[in-house]
Image (tube, rainbow, N blue to C red; front, side, top):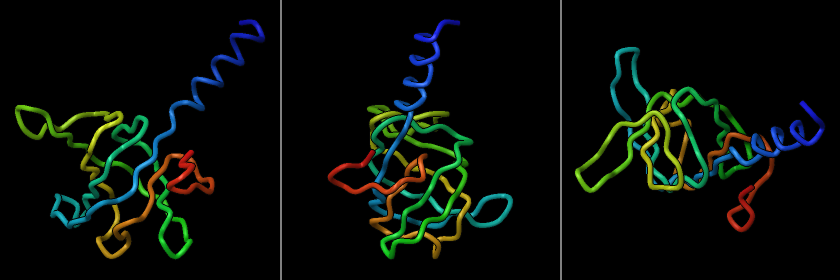
Length: 118
């Protein structure tokens, strides 16, 4: 592996970020208790099992793990292992009271805004 291969490999990892503003939330019952589904338009790629950061409107940051994903297709809702650049329902292992509308989700823990998400 040469230096350029190393640089290209790191560049690809940087481009695998995702960003989403929470449009809506609701609670669901699952085998292990309650979880929360957040709905929003994902920019970038997100996968089941990813650890994500939640930037709350009050400025605090928390983390969660993606438990499931659902996208809408012409044939109806479809559960998927990953979603990219589309409206998505994201099942998170957080209580419904731990996340609110307009919270921002990302897989990087850096400061971002709606104007400059990543």
